[in-house]
View 1 (cartoon, rainbow, N blue to C red):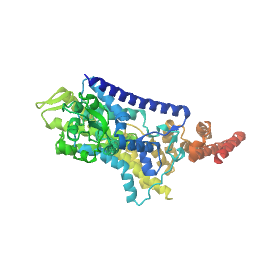
View 2 (view 1 turned 60 degrees about the horizontal axis):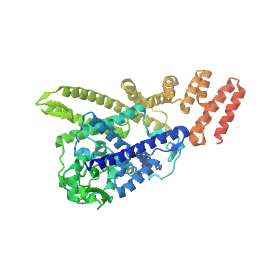
View 3 (view 1 turned 120 degrees about the vertical axis):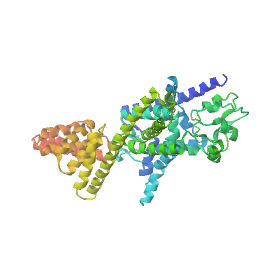
View 4 (view 1 turned 135 degrees about the vertical axis):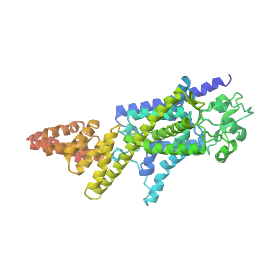
Length: 535
């Protein structure tokens, strides 16, 4: 009982820290809604824009600060401030409350997934640039006018998906990953930032260390939610050397002797490299099963990444990890006499149990959905590639290629006919293809859908107004333009492109009003347009 009170205390402090993080999220969002501008998102993923485009982002600066802090104090950020870890811990707590204690999954090959993703995100852009002979991007501070503001933005939600994808992310990165692969399994098998901070953890002097005697009772290991074999590492090295240690302090609280503490020790770089060989950590799968896991995981990434232009990369990794283990479990259900998925016995003594039949039905539905998603994703990527080639040719001064237009439209038509979700990008590409062919009548329905979702899109409003004028529908053209010109004028922070588009809308409205004989209104619109041009 002596260890129980401090355990609850540490957990309360850690929960309080994570609650504060989410309160700060809410304050950040409220400030954006009230002020219209706020600090750019503190998302590690925005470091990609720094590495690829040279735009120094708040997320990149935040990642650098977290990395430097980890070099000294270890991975306290992951254990005490990461919202994805908070989601996983909450999911694990809820599952325990309903009597489900997921067994941690130990896979050899999946351990390489997160490092591979880290290399893809942070190293591959430089490799690709060097391979193409391109110079390194110059670091610079950008504004909203360049599409991705560095530190102050009007678009806080720029990196966030819609509400349905957010819900899917919560389910995938939280409950699904925890249930199938164990607590904090997203940190183990998917998180690229954890790999980066894990590198810093290897040289950090602040560690979980052993001070005094150890009875090797194993309570520290049992308390570790990251599934580190704490008592064995302490016995051999007198400190925890695993780079997966998140400094959650559960092992410190669990020690009945009070011998496990936070202190300073020798950097664990070399010790952690030898750790698996010394301990002989058992794995759960044969090499054939590991190969199946790898194939299914890579297939999941190919299928779900950017599906419907909506699924973000980290959500893709979680879905791929769940797909990999779910596929292996389905194969085991066919081949093995007994299979269990906590807390359900799916198969026993060669006989399927009711839970097994339910899982088989769910697995069949998931397989069907994955195949369908792969079909859609292939058409999406093929259509996007053909569309990009058309745009590149036009930008190079070439006329639109009819053959590439036909290819792009064929792929996009398959997405339109068979897709479960209709992304806005599909309508934008269809509309553009018809405009490339000078077929505005066919483009008009797609433009209407674009404006229904993005009513403030000035560029497409101007395009629609021009189409309406070609069939002498001046009144509808005026109403289309007034939907944006009647709003308050753009602020100086909107950038030159937004200002130029707004000026073009006022100029077109001035010309229409002049042709209709409304001279005063035409003069007023022309004056507004001139003022915007001279900013």
